[in-house]
Amino acid sequence: MAESFLFHPLDEATRRNPYELYARGRREFPVFAHPGLPLRVFSVFRHEDCQAVLRDDETWSNVFRIEETQLQSDLAALDADFGEPPPPSMLGTDGAEHARLRSLVNKAFTPRIIRRLEPRMHEIARELIHAAVQRGSVDLVEALTYPLPVTIIAEMIGVPSEDRARFKVWSDEAVSVLGTGFFGGLDFERLKRQRQLLEQMRAYFVPLAEERRRAPRDDLLTGLVQAEYEGSQLSLEEMLSMLVLILVAGNETTTTLIGNAVLELLAHPDQLARLRADRSLLPSAIEEVLRFSSPVQFDPRRATRTLELRGHKIERDDVVLCWLGSANRDEALCDRPHVFDIGRERTAHLAFGFGVHYCLGANLARLEAQVALGTLLEQTNSFERTDDSPLPLHPSPVFRGVTSLPVRLTSA
Ligand code: HEM
Image (spheres, rainbow, N blue to C red):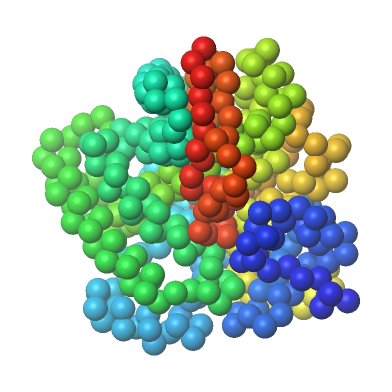
């Protein structure tokens, strides 16, 4: 019976090790109706089903109607204080609107442009890891996994990387409540704080955008400003939403991926030794971390019509959570899905999503993680956890990752 399946995505023990529950979900409850939530929410555990949902963007929307929840009046009060809410980023749009927004930034993420960033990634990673090795014991999140992606993204956008402490505050706050609303845990005070921070971001970016209008440079901000001017395709508000998305999507996720890579290699010393002996395995090792310990655990969608899903009647506006972390461990996806094998043949994992919203920064994230890990191996003889205590989890249930990772490093 469905009642005997206790799957609470906010429960700490579940978040630390969701894999047995995922496996049971895939076997016995491939579509699970969450009881007792303010919204009608269904979890989907199988690879085949997650992929089918993400592929069909007519039936499954990425626009969520938060105003239909009990928070409606609270949010109206926020709008009274802060004015109209910002327009959704491309992630929160569908169809032609999504295609229009995506096409405006697409060209900044082509494989050629990303490859051009590689020497700079090596430079930053070497500096950061050199400093970390000098210190001996560091929190790897502070020392490497956070500053590398944020510096790259700041340079891509064209803002001073000295401002990255500020980006961390914005980015942490923006993602802290991500996904909690589906489980009835949306905190009004946090939402209010987010709106305040958005005002700060606006105050920060508007003068920079004005500056680019006067004096264009070779950066993403100039590209966005020009996109706005040419045929007024991108409004200022849309541009701000885009910057917030890129800043946040580009940071937290990649930080998490690099941290998860270090954690999985420490948990699997044979695979770490294998990688030290053969660095050509770096790309497949990162691919395996993406599959095995996926930074983004679930990807939500809203039904646009009534339908049936594995025996469940889904009504219009019901929410489906595609558990990417489960799909990527599906027995139907690959052999021995619970084995961490850095030499595994490429799988059709869903760590970057699937379909029209497929991650725009996938190539960037892959390369950054390869450079970070490769440099760490190059500049150290060993790295290890300083103690065995449980590490603090990322506050959002969307993410699988830790916010602090104390390690001891010995120089190569
Ligand atoms: C390990 C790192 C990353 C992971 C696991 C990841 C994961 C994802 C996933 C699962 C989606 C799909 C969301 C959906 O279907 O609703 C997505 C979309 C997106 N990602 Fe990433 N991401 C990562 C890194 C990045 C980076 C570095 C950037 C940019 C600098 C980025 C930018 C975006 C954008 C803009 C979207 C929205 C695309 C759209 O709506 O068309 N991501 N990402």
